[in-house]
Length: 182
Image 1: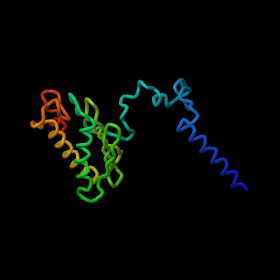
Image 2 (image 1 turned 90 degrees about the horizontal axis):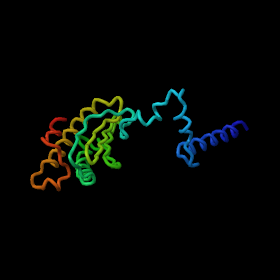
Image 3 (image 1 turned 135 degrees about the vertical axis):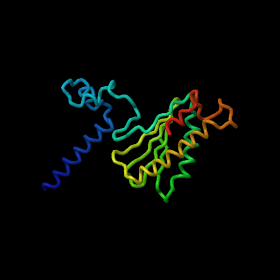
Image 4 (image 1 turned 60 degrees about the horizontal axis):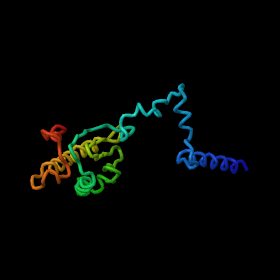
């Protein structure tokens, strides 16, 4: 008898959770109250002025950012996807799992201690590491994959057989941004 009542209370709590989490009632979920509460310890979480990078993730570390003159996001993402597909099983099968996200690529390491998040924007290439304590194996493979990524970016940016206006990546002068992050 008591078990049934507990189950009913649990499902009611889940219903409230899903309504609040997914905004199913088209309300603001109380965000206005949290934003206006000057005594809230978590005020920074809701204060738009304190949030610097919309692509920053908790537990992530910026590895590098390359500012570019122009970048063709779709073509560059396809080019790099094909490269990473070739590297996904290196050195062993299933080392990396690749996901295409809006504007970039995510590479997840098989031991789940870390991931690379590559964001391609019209004016920058941003690479972040997700994971607060990556394994030594992850760090070793990350350095290999990042060197390969930089080689591919260099190849794309400096392919003299393609007119500069048609290249997927054009760097700002003097054109040493990729070299600088190595």
